[in-house]
Length: 271
Ligand SMILES: Nc1ncnc2c1ncn2[C@@H]1O[C@H](COP(=O)(O)OP(=O)(O)OP(=O)(O)O)[C@@H](O)[C@H]1O
Figure (cartoon, rainbow, N blue to C red):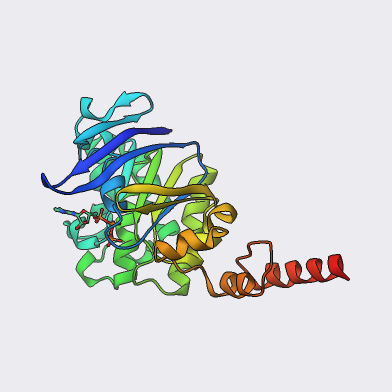
């Protein structure tokens, strides 16, 4: 899967550009996190990856094909989009029906659908909830229902818009498992998140957006080493990263063991 943006612009009105010339290539199966303050343009950006929004300037190509040549329904087979708010996505009377709906629309055969329902229900923790109405699910389960419904379509790329919103620790752990599973299957996961602990624990590439443009794009270590730029974009690194930076450590760390390791190394070096 390759998503290529060239000079992408999006204006909701004549006066304001929500995206102001974005050049990006997202490729392969390395999970990508998109971060940035509220209103930076993250959701507007990812809604261009399967045609929910269309460029008002520049271009979007999916595997070399211009986004404007196909409908959003057609692109959804290749790029799945998990909405931030489950109520924007769920509309059927049971989890099973939500899971079966998309695959039926694209003509997946009944045996494959039945097999995938069981697999995806297990992955999303909903095996015992298949016949429950989505309204009767907890907010966390609802979120996993929307994720499951998208994964059921077997798209080559999956976009998660704020998946950690309202999740507890076990929800975050399940999300981690899902992202790892999709990566193992060669799928590209693109995730918008405000949760920097989640970002640093799960993503190797991080894109920082600010005022409709890409401010930083690099490995998680490169990006979180840019303390001044992050501060100006109102991004707060995880606590342990800030402690290490405050202590003057050269290495960017995201966990306590990595912090201890780095401090020991620097002490030995100086001692
Ligand atoms: N449907 C819309 N109509 C008009 N303006 C919009 C619309 N959606 C977003 N905007 C504006 O476009 C800009 C970018 O918004 P967007 O939602 O893409 O940012 P974001 O980085 O995803 O923010 P958040 O983290 O709050 O979700 C903002 O100024 C926002 O007010």
